[in-house]
Length: 394
Image (cartoon, rainbow, N blue to C red; front, top):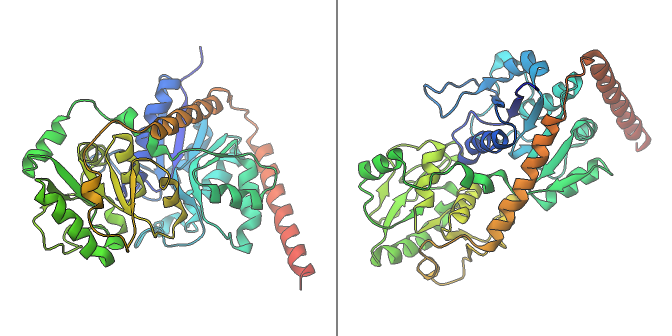
């Protein structure tokens, strides 16, 4: 009889960002269905405890000590494969870890696992375009060390294909499309208490008090005012405080209910699923709403490519700055999720089948030295090739 699997997952699970905190919860739920008895261990820069956080998060220092005990390492989801440092305001590794930022939470774990002979899955990650020249060789070795490379945006497929031609890069839905597996059908006691505490008695629409909506506050206010005139309560709900969300930020000059604290991720998801519409910039708030049949309202002109994956979904209403008011009240009220959402959920289910197979098929080879030597050899060859290419171009 095989032993229960131990699986690690790395990412930015130590920040108050809705999507980042959903990923380990969804991953654990999906994998335990396929690998009964498995244990999922989350790793990030900063250690967190359930006494003050939604779940335990271990330090990347722990990962270095525990990597050989794992049967699989999952990287992501979210926008992890990047080289810019603007992940979130003030976000960086503790000085004692002595890690490069931001590669410390995705590249280093990938190479650490590869050097230990532990299979790696990149789980529907986002990849920044225009990888800097100094990082190309490192990224190529990392990609080619990964058992299953999956990304969530066509642009990410293109970037990884440019770095490593011939690598099989899969395009899969964002992990948050699996949120239905972690939601309760009936209202939870935590949700009922939250509703009572905030006097949220009646149908409501949500507005995300995001910095990215502040320049359009007049349009947002007019849309919400029209909804309020129809009897809907307006709830200001921060989705990602780490990215600047704060109640009152939009200065709406409108009667609203303001969240008195940031809800933990499953409660936040339940608040979204019980709304009649949401006005948001957040990718993951949008996805949770789509999965729940809640109409999503968002502005079209957003340069970040990750938001473009939402544009074609039937449940998304895209606002233009030039259109007149009335879009919110035209599409308000929960309904069943559209067929395109069910299609995304089905594709994501197949993805989790493949992830589970990577762990199921693994048996510890006990040849860490050979794996590490091979990895160092590949890195050295790549660096030498890059330097030769640079000298040849001058």
